[in-house]
Every structure is written in structure tokens, then in C-alpha cells.
Amino acid sequence: MSFKFKAVAGLAAFAFTLSASSVMANSSPQTATFQVLMKINKSCTVAAGAGSNIQLGAVGGVDANTAVGTTGTNNFSVTCSNTTVYNMALQSTNNASTAGLGTLKGATGGNTDTLTYQLHSGSAAGPIWGNSGVTATTVGNGLGGTGNGTAQSIPVYAAVTAAAPANVTPDNYSDTVTVSVYF
Image (tube, rainbow, N blue to C red; front, side):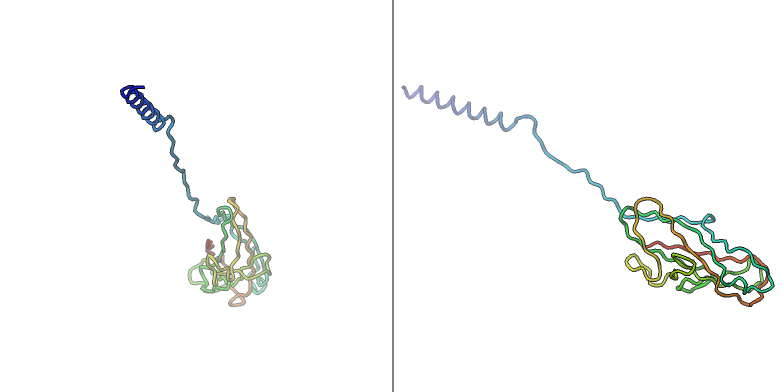
């Protein structure tokens, strides 16, 4: 075999190899990957309002001490994302107590008479429900729960504990309770 033939054959083999590797490098399809990402943040909402009011009823106006021991209950709802741990606190607007004590005040101007009530969980005589030490990680004297992504009905109880004076003025007595949900 001549040198010329060997050189041409070698060049042809080199060109074929170059051409084949070039085809291999540009083969179809070329692929790469990316991710679709989403973060779901934990969340909670609370729903109360007029439908959650606790009606303690009406008592004869001669001796308001007959109101002591009167109880009532109703529900509010908490909706937290699935598996979100939460703690709930209750606070009376008319009473700064963190021990779940509330104060009912008369609607008529100048009426300074009051009725005191206690908030409870579980039953009218159950654990006191207030807002002492309640945080996202500590239940304190609040109430804890775990969300499931749907509205959870939470019962709350109120029990009248005292009247001042004993013969309170006939009036409509009320208080507003704030529900705080920590998560």
C-alpha cells in the first residue's frame, strides 16, 4: 500500500470520526431540568361575631345576686392550615384581667353597676380560659389545637360570678371578648 493511499485513508478515517463525534455532540433531543416550587405558609383565621354571642338570659331586677351562677355557651370558629399548631386566648374589653374574668357593664349612661363573669373551656365549670402566657408556642391559660384546613368549632362558656352592687340597675349589660389565635 502506498504512502499516499495510507494518508488519504487516514484522513478519511479522521474525517469520519470527526463527523461522527460532531453528530453525537449535537444529537437530538438535548435535555435539561428545572423545578416548579411553591411554599405553603401556615395560616389561621378566626370567625366570631353576633352569631357567637353568649346569651346569659334575663334575671329579675330585685336582687342581681340571683344572676350569680347563671351560665351560657356558644361557639366561634378557627380555621388553620393542616397540621398547624395554634393557641387561643380570650380577653374581656371591660376587664384587664388575664385570668379570663370579664365585666358586664350597663348600656345606659351613668350606670356604674357591673356583673362579673368567668370564661371557661370544656364546660361552664371547666378550666379557666384567659390570656395569661399564651403565645404561639405556649398555651398558658388559653386553649390549644391543631388545624386541619377546615373551620373548627370552638365552644366557650361564661358563668356569672358576682354582681356589684347586689341590686344592680335594670339595664342591658354587655362586654366584648377578643379572641386571639397564635400560630
